[in-house]
Length: 257
Length: 262
Image (cartoon, rainbow over all chains, first blue to last red; front, side, top):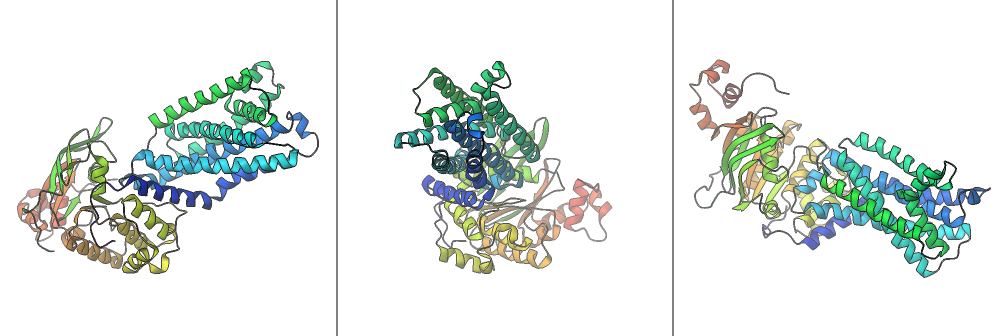
């Protein structure tokens, strides 16, 4: 304990936020699962799809890189972030933080900042690897657009994850539902998007979180002209963020009991 | 126990007609008490009596249905962050991020309370509580007694006006328990006030200046341990459970009943 009684006024926000960011960054760096989900898994997909006829079946190089980016965001946000939050709530880490003078929004914002920053770094790495192994030539503007879409994608899946952990208290249930949801979203976005499940499913797939993000990523990587489909995908993503973030914040419970 | 300086300052904690409910179930029902500067106050009660819920309301973790909570004159409900800045808290089951070392935990919580700690300061503090060899370890790698010492260090990192300890000696061996009692006495000597919950009558008598017995959300009695024994010495409920001269435990069981609570 420090010897002198500190000023009993509320401590400075800046110091509190820096302390949280430092701690959350250390936690993220020590969490191997999160790093694997963010970068290694998408890179495995990028490399695997260079063999055989994988590229053409999945719609070309740009779409594959878009798929890898989306998968990285989906798994690290929907599984990594959500499960870490649920686990910390379960064992009392969140409660311990809440009895400090740090406001609730600061505790959550710090986690979100670190998660999004990790996703951005991972996305840039995935794009660089994707460009190399799939022979894409990208300019600075495309990299910036990829980062912008990655922020949007992270926001979409973090919002969905926040809603999940807000509505469900049990960590085991969150884990199970999160995995099922991830598989469902992937199948809908990837398989549905190919059209092999019919036109109606393809229509739904294009508007699904994975489908919308893959559209945006592949159009950015292809340097396609802005289309109505892009506008629709962008609006769909914004709507997902708004709806799920509202649910996740409105019904979030800081205690698992 | 040292003398408590009651009249010179306003109460460090003023709980007035506190009522806490979870849905339709009222768990704290009109509880009122005050804690003064330099006082160690014990809240005793069986499981589910309302002790932790009372503490949770003071800590700002649950919103009371009614009543007033003032920490150093600051309304907990109106200015929760200012009130929290004056509180040190050790929860019943404190847990810190599993990926952080003790040093990193100390820096995190120091920062949250506005205390910048250098590596040397953390080392000195850890030496004082016998954890200098564990600086690079993670919380889960510590023994129960070491975890309690660290949790108490974190709770007092900003030298708070009022320290809230929720069953601080639960699960500790006698040596660790005595060590914690000594530390609580030292903290009082440094001017801290302390509110602790406990099941241990021995602990209440050893360290508390005053105790309150709570059950079914109601405050049954408040006073110095010896006062409570005198006050309830002739109570038939106490006499029926006493073996010889009534003790604080006899008063506790007499007032709260003999049935086992979950």
